[in-house]
Image (cartoon, rainbow, N blue to C red):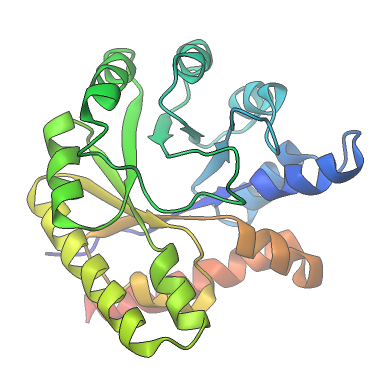
Length: 252
C-alpha cells in the first residue's frame, strides 16, 4: 500500500478555552485557524460541546464562513448538534462521546452499544452531503461496528497510547500501539478512511505518521500549549515536519 499524503487538522478548541477564561473576544479561535492554515494546516477541527465550555455557536458559524480549508465539526450525536450541523453544512462531522463531568474526551464512542442511536445520525448527515467520521477506539469490534453503520471514516483514539508513553508504562504503551497499528490496517481493509488523534505531540505524531493507512491527524491541545513558547505558526510548521519525517518511513 502506497502511503497517502498525510493531512493535518488543527483543533482550535483550546484557543477558545483561553478566551473563555476571561471572557471577551481574545484570543480569537478563528484568527488562530487562519494562522494555522497559512502555516500548513490542511483543515480545522472544532468541537461544539453541549455545555459550550470552549467553542461557541458563533465560532462555528464564523469558521465555516471565513476559513478557506475544510471544517471538521466535532459533536455528540444529539438532536441539537445534528440540527446545527445541517444548518452549518461543514465539510465533515466527527461524532464523539461527550460527558459533562469529563475534562476532555475520554476514550472513543461505543459504536457497538450505541448502534441504534448512531445509525440515524450517520444516515442524516451523509444524506446532507457531509462526510461522517466516528471517533472510536481501535478494538476490532468497534471498527466492525463503524463499518456496519456506514460511516466512511474512522478516527482512532490515540490518547491511551500517548498517556502510557508519557507515564513510562512501556508494556501498556506497546500493547496500545499494536492495537492502533492493527486497527488502522483492519479499518483500511474495510474500505474506511483512517484518521487518528488525541494526545499527540511531535514524537507520537512522527511515530503514527509511519502507518500508511492513516491519512489524517487531528491535533489541538499540544499545538496550542506549545504556541505559548514558539508561536502558533511555528508550532504548526514543526508538527508538519515531524509528520513528514514519519511519512518518509512509510515510503521506505
